[in-house]
Length: 280
Image 1 (spheres, rainbow, N blue to C red):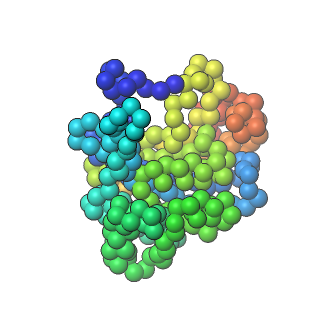
Image 2: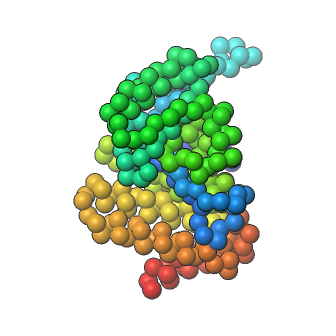
Image 3: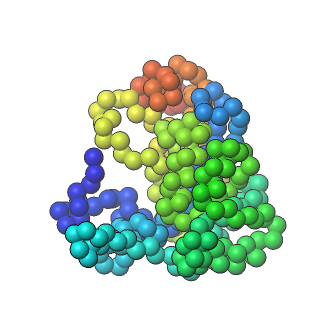
């Protein structure tokens, strides 16, 4: 199910909130959890930092109208926006995150073909990298990265890239970690943040009590961690960590997995199991 066109009174609330609140960073972790079935036979733990307000996304590239238009019924064009400010701030966000992890950054681009737009993004990434000499830095073409994620996801720590590339690669990474039902994420800006599951709203599952709630619950834990940093309140970080610990323990038990993970538990079963572990 799609949102109605804006001309028909419909809007994508996610895109609208990201634009109005200037939520320029979409932080999307992907990591394996004990007991959760995955297509791989090894563990990995990475984060994709996706630029959230520019790129090819038509609902957030223009002040007025969209970045897509049709000069004739037989020609469809899409405009991509990449700015120096937008590129520098998302790369800096990724470097700050890498400093809290394993201090490794991978910049993903296609500057060999998109010489102007990705060229600007890559130029900005190199400039910001000079401010972080203690963080390991590498550059990978987006098509190569799609292959590397399948072959050796454990080799990566923090990956930063433009909007559409980040959207696609993060879906790939989270499928390798167990599926989109486990895919937590957070949209952040200088002032505001919104916790949001990486996947869509899945209207086809509405009212059936079968959806995996872990992505939303994990997103809430990420929001508490973000608030802890902004408010200098360790209690919020402790709460977020407790939620993730309860979530992981619940997923380690085959009896409390939803059908997307090969289980038979319903949405309410999983939520109640996580809540029970939090209380204990």
